[in-house]
Structure formats: structure tokens, C-alpha cells
Image (cartoon, rainbow, N blue to C red; front, side):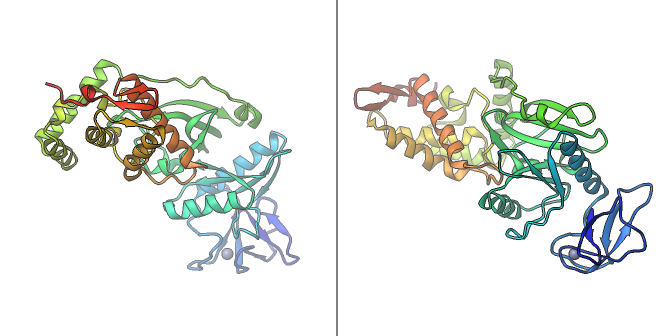
Length: 362
Ligand SMILES: [Zn+2]
């Protein structure tokens, strides 16, 4: 921790604390020791083996340094900041609390240690319920050159109209914020993304907030499609359990993975919020629609079909506010694709399920 209480219950910064004083943890009130040297960031520490609910001693040097850098950056950018602010109503203590004029306070959480999805969800929800916004910034244990839908950083996925699906990293050695935005998934490949750095030494927080990039919409090029098909083939030949299961589903319907209609293979990059490849979802849609060939469906029925098939594929999203809206947008995108591919044909009272697009390829 960077702040501890002195005998008069005042919060004192470790950087300026006097060595001969007694200090206690603002969370559990146990005595803490001032650690200040030339190597690590000045901080307070509990005695060895002391367990504290508020401050775990897993606090790494990176975490201590990062939260101090973040506080300094926001302060230098003209905002009021508070390190390790005690939020009594929440029993939470964000690394840095920022007051933005005319907006709800913003909690910055610099995450360098493992955190379960359940804890993450509870903490994010706690902030929202009490009128705080929260920004999770990830430290080096979460850095990976290639992000995949299964990467541990992905549970911190956030969403905005400005940046699409995004993750925020803080790099203590550069004193820079790295924004990885417009994260999109092509099945089986690492995620695609765009990236921007904000160096705290010569860029302000305002520049970050005002950053409105053009979000690219990558399309699957034929070469990638062929690579995907090859991977599926290899997977089938080597009996990968997932592909064996998919193939079995196809057999039951009288086809094979190789003779699925082309539209079942997603050709555009999509938001990475599924635990399964998008192909698995689209296949379920295909099977369901085959049962409904040549019937007329209302929009409501179509959306419901989208929900039913999507639910089992969804990953737990912990930081995305209003995840249902995001899921609904996935379903809208699916329906648009089905219309473009002539799987659904508009008729006066709804959409006709076009049996010609539901045949197995030869
Ligand atoms: Zn404590």
C-alpha cells in the first residue's frame, strides 16, 4: 500500500512519511512498516504472514509503481486524484480514484495479479451499483504478443462505441498506456486489433479520452479462408474432439463439415465474446433453420432463434456494461448476414426460410 494512517488517523503517503512514526493499515488497522529504498517504490507493508482483507501482500513492485505513475499522470493532466481511496459503502479501495468534472468518479484498477472472473464481476458490479465508473488497466502478467479469445486478459474486455471491444494495458517501464482496441475474432486465428500508445511524459489524459480512431472492419481474405479450411481438415484427420463432435452433428443431418453451405463459415471478423468459434454457433443456426425450411418467421421468432443458439456459446463478460445489448447486436449481425446470403428472404409478413440455401454442398 502507498498510504497508511498515522497516530492521528491521517492518511500519509509513503513517499513523504517520516521514518520514526508508527503507521497502521487503513483497512485492518494492524501496524505496518515503511519500506523506502532506492530500488522499490516507497510503500507500507504488513508484518510477515499477516493476512489482510483490504491489502493483499501479493502487491508486486510493478503494481506499487504503476498506481503511483497513474495517479501522477491524471494529476498532471489536471484531475483531482486520490490514491487507495477508502470507499466505505463498497468496502473497496480503488488503486486511484479520479474526479472528472461533471461526470461520475472514475476508479482506476491496475491489475497485475490473477483475479477470478467471479471476483472481477463482483468488483465491477460494486463500482457500478454505487455510481462509480471503473477502468481496468492490465500489467505485464497479462501482456501477450498475440491475444486469443481464451487469453486471461480477455475477461477484462470492455466495450465502447469509440473503441469497440478494447483492453487497456499500463507499461511501467515506458510510463505509457497501451490501448488495444477494435479487438475482433476470425475463428481459429489470433485476434485482430488496432493499437495506440499514450506516453504520460508528453501526452495528457485528455488526449486519450478524445481519441476517436477509425475502426477498421477486416474481412477474411481467400488465403485466410483456405488456411481455416485446411486447419479444419487436419483437425478432422487427427480426430480433434471438438471437430469430431461437429462432424457427428453433420452426419446426423445427412452431411459433412466439408459440405456445409459457404455462409455457415463466418467471413467477417466478429466481437470476441464467445468461448467457441463462431462456426459452432452458425452451425447450430444452420441446423435449426433446416427444421424450419420454407416456413415464414417473424422478427421476434428469428431473434429468439438467435438467442437460443447463442447462449451456450457465450463467454462470461465481466467488465462489459449491458452485455445483453452487445449480444443482441451479434444476433442482428447474424440476421443481416442471413438476409445478405439469401438464407432469409423478406416477404410481406416476415422472412421466408430459403430451403435452397440450406442444402448441403456437393
Ligand atoms: Zn491491513
